[in-house]
Length: 416
Figure 1 (tube, rainbow, N blue to C red):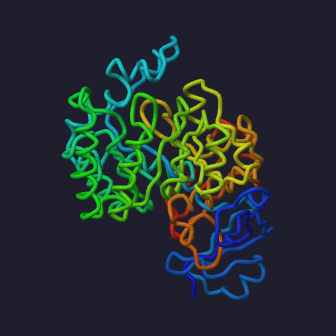
Figure 2 (figure 1 turned 90 degrees about the vertical axis):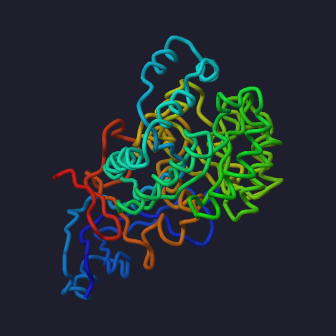
C-alpha cells in the first residue's frame, strides 16, 4: 500500500543519466500527460499514466487529484545567504543613487553592516529567523536549500551561524545544505592584517567546522579588494584537506583569475560569473566545474547578466540560484530567477527548469535524492497553478506555485 498517489498531473521532469546536463541535453524535459506518482515512505516508488497507476495502487492511503496542473521537481536553490539579521533597504536606495557595491562595502555597509547585527543575536534568534524564511522558500517551490555562514567573520559567530543552520535543519522539513564562508569579507578588526585572518580561517575555523560536521562545503568570495585567487586557493585547499567540498564566488565584479582556479583545485561550482572571460569558461569546461548563475543579483544591482548562452554553448553545466541575501538579492523566489534567466539571459524555458532542479542538485551533491521525478528519488514536487512550466517565465513576477510536497507530505498550498 502506497502512502500517496498523485493523479492527473501534467508531469515535466529532467531525466538523470548520471551527470549534469550540458549542451543540448539541458534543453530536454520528459513529459507524462495525465501522469501519476506513487509515494511510499517519502520516496517515489512508481510513475506512469493515471489509469495504470490507479489500477495498481487503488488501495493508496491518500489520493491527490492534480486536476491536470503542471507537476515539476521541487526547486533546488544551491546558493543563498538566507541566515541574517535585519534588512538593508537604505543601501538599496544608495545604489539607486549611484553608489557601487564596493563603495558601500568600503564605507562599512554591505556585508559588514549585516555582520554587526548578527554578532548581537543568539543561536535561537538566528534559528527562528531562518525558519521563517524557509516557510517562504517553500511557498515558491524550493524543497532543497543551500545556506551559507559568512556574516559572523570571527570564530565564535561563524560557528554560531552554522549551529543555527543545523537547528533549523532538524526542526523543518526543508533539506538544508550548510556552507562555511568565513572568507566572505574582511572583518573590520582585521582590515590591515588580512593575512592573519586568512590564517585564522585555515587553521582554526575550517578544522573545527569539519570535525563537528557543521558544513558540507567551504566557499570564498574571490574578488578584487576581497580575497585574491592565491588566498582563495589556500582556503579551498584547506577545506578539501578536511573533507569539505568546495565552491567559490567568482568573477562577479572583476575578472581576476578566480574561475581559472577550477583547473588547479576541485570545485563543485563557480558562482556569479558576470565578468567571466573566455579563459574562465574554458577552465570550467575542461574541469567539469558547474557554473551557478544568480540572475536576481545582477537584476537588483542593475548589472549585465552573466552570459549563460555562451557558457551553455561551450559545454559548461549551468545551475540557477536566488542568492537570497539582505543586500543584493532580497528574493526567495526561484520562479523569478527562472523568469529572469529566460527573459534576460537567453535560456530556453526547459534549460531554466533543468538548471533550477537537476543541475542544481548536482552542484550540491544531492542528485541521487532530488532534482528529478524518478523512481527511487524523494517525492519532492511542485504543482503549478497552470498546466505548463511555460507559465513560470510567461506570467513572470507572480508566484506560479499552487502546492508543494516534500517527501510526499504537503508543506504549502495556495488554497490554505
